[in-house]
Amino acid sequence: MQIRDLPYSDPGDPDVRSGPRFLFWLGRNQLGGQLKSLSWGLLHQLAIAGLPVTVGFAVQAVIDRSGGRLALAGGLIVALGVLVAVGDTMLHRTAVTNWITAAARVQQLLARKTAELGSALTRRVAAGEVVAVSTGDVEKIGWFVEALSRFAAAATALVVICVGLAFYLPSLGLMVALAMPVLALAVLPLLPRATRRADEQREKAGKATELASDTVAGLRVLRGIGGEELFLGRYRRASQEVRRAAVRSARMWALISAVQVLLPGILLISLVWYGATLARDGRIDVGQLVTVYSAATLMLFPLRHFEEIAMAYSFSRPSAQRAVRVLSLHRSAQEATVEGVTPTGDLYDPATGLMAPRGQFTAVVCGDPDEAGRLADRLGGHAETGDEDDRAAAAPSVLLGGVALDEIPLHAARAAVLVQDKDPVLLSGTLRDLLDVPSSGLVTPDAALEAAQCADVLSALAQASADNDGDPMRTRITERGRSLSGGQRQRLALARSLVTDPEALVLDEPTSAVDSHTEARVAAGIAKLRQGRTTVAFASSPLLLDAADRVVLVHEGTVVAVGNHRDLLRTEPRYRAVVTRETDDEAAAADTANGVGDVPALKRDDVPAMKSIEEIEERA
Image (cartoon, rainbow, N blue to C red; front, top):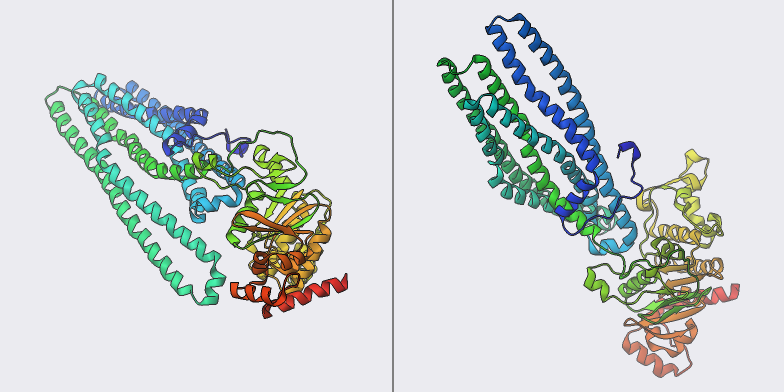
């Protein structure tokens, strides 16, 4: 796999049983790249190892006053230098390729899982942790994959050099061969503590990132209530904890580095002292001493890879564990079993008994907003994620035209049923980009914008598009639409959903951020544009409820009443209590005063809403 071939057509099915197993799976799937890197690493390391032999040969040639052998030694040094340069260049190229391709594979896996889970992801994993996994953790995982082949090359080179020295000059070679395992393994007792401190640092950094992302997301609210300094103080304390943890971690790694400098230094001093004694006594040649000393000195370079692989593993293991935590989540209780099916028909939830007939505008009233959000997610096939036991005990899948959404491919389920969250997100880009979404092609952007009552939004964007000849479609919208009001963002998101024109459209409080007059027009626009298509809206506003073909009341997770808005107001006290915001005392008084068949007296806050309904009837 080359960088130019990215992205992967299929990143594969990862082993998510544990972090180490995931790292092993990554390395196994890049076996070709690892072998290339290992081969070039061996060439590089062994060419370096050959330099001491040629240098010792050259020194002995000078002592023996042999010009021919000196010239041969010079030629060998030049050849080895070329091999070192080529090996180092290609090793770096292949190792970095392994790093980037491994990181790209993990990012593709995370992106695929994020698209599969949708809004259910952030209910299981904090948004800050997701950001940390997809940025810093991906880089650390790639680092370990990249360092693995270089470590293997270095370890192989050390073994070859030690064996060669033992045969070349046993008196000094055995001394070096016995010392090398000690030097390589001396830092092992320090690694557990260093790993724990590194884990603590990453945990605190993840919490600080989560706090920062939450603060930025709620900055407008914080400014409104004057809470900026409070949250800034919290972030300062969190960042200082990260700094202190980083210092403690750095101290351990500094100690490990010091050990890897001190022990080789002791070896070299001992080697020079003992070798000089042997050379003085005539038991070895000066050239042999130079060869062994040079080889021992150069062996310190591959020895450094032992420290690097230890650091890479200690940093990548918890990163891989966090990635596994995300990748092991599942969207539903079942896997897709029906291929090539795009279901149509009634939308039915067996768990609650909610039925949305095909081609009708159904409004759903829930007394609990959280329950409404969960039910909206269920209707779109966004089942709660969890482990195998949780998924096995989950409620049965929602049916569309008698076909379970959990049993059809994910892309087909998403194309058939679109769920607009209560707080939809607008990505940065132009308005044309915002509305350029997969769709049936039957609803134009202009029609969707008109139905969503976005005329004032277009006017505001036109005024802000001085560089685009006043064309609002070419005006850039900032991230999350922060330059727009809450109502404007909500209506643009609604227009985007209407353009998609799915078989079934589920809207969770689509008009909660607009005034009553705009809400009445939006409700009428949805009903007109979606005529003949299945639409479900979770709401408690009389304006939207009165525009629906049928209204369903869900109480404590079960459908308890079905009818139209006005009939339910007269006959269903629980419905009336939710829609009119009545207290129990007010409901009892209304029943006593009005009797059966009369609409109860509404609270003062609800009078304008009812007047708006009358205005709609008059215009109709």
